[in-house]
Image (cartoon, rainbow, N blue to C red; front, side, top):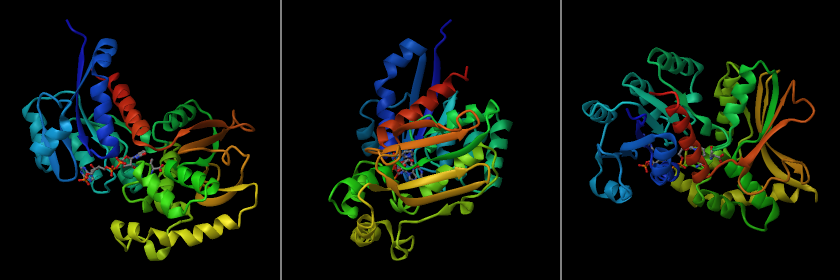
Length: 360
Ligand SMILES: NC(=O)C1=CN([C@@H]2O[C@H](COP(=O)(O)OP(=O)(O)OC[C@H]3O[C@@H](n4cnc5c(N)ncnc54)[C@H](OP(=O)(O)O)[C@@H]3O)[C@@H](O)[C@H]2O)C=CC1
Ligand SMILES: N[C@@H](CC=O)C(=O)O
């Protein structure tokens, strides 16, 4: 009898992260089969409007196939398709940044899907939804993995869970939680380039959210703090996070993404002023802090000494300093690329493989 296991993975969102994930899975097929007897089939991929179906799984030409043969869809069409083909071990990947898409999680779970998500929204809606989602997962014996929600491919959530589950008292988590803002302030502090040009670069590199104001407003970091707080069983909401937004009021949510992009030069002067106010040995850093003891979550722009751990960050690196009873004076530190399509897709891939280990 063969021990081979097949997963049927439906990928929602084929932008930076989703399309990289597909390519990583296709490239690893032989290795997965040989070393782990794991066969990952991708019978459906979608963007916000169109879906491409192939009951035998995607071919390497999937991008052309999607362009030529994708059709408009509703979530019910996908549920009907997987049912018709009696697919087992179903996994839905949320590689969207869509606030509405998470409303599909419950119907997906009720129809046999496990969920693996890079999208932070499901974990940062009301605490009521957070609990409802977990109750539904339990009822249907399904898993929800979301390591990439914090620190992209870095093992942040897993580390915090392990510490917490083994009774370790975590007191404080502090660091640079945003890969895009790390990149932006690392470059802006050390180079003579305008803020808007660096923002554009970060966006081209796929480091920012589809709407970069999610990063600049502090929303994305606030979500990450909230996700970690909830892992530590702190019952709190997104609006409880104290956030210093970097988006001027005139460019906030009332303008479209396109209008914001075309007016991003308006950010140059205020950031140039902040840079001029720095002392010689200082750089700008956008930091997050979760004070577990006082249940306080805060996101702000600070002037940091160049030679501190946070001041020395390079590229799109994030850093997470975890202070706890066993790591009091010298924190447990997790550092590495905190954003980017390749590391994030690899993080999703790793969650898929982890999930496969718990399936028949
Ligand atoms: N980039 C990074 O470094 C990291 C990203 N993440 C998360 O990964 C997610 C994806 O990011 P990224 O790939 O950069 O974003 P992109 O904007 O590149 O891609 C988003 C994709 O989602 C699709 N989409 C939007 N709404 C829906 C919907 N309702 N149903 C199905 N598909 C939809 C878009 O389709 P369309 O083109 O039709 O709009 C697009 O294909 C985000 O949640 C982000 O926070 C997490 C960690 C790091
Ligand atoms: N936009 C985010 C991507 C990862 O979550 C970031 O910059 O960290």
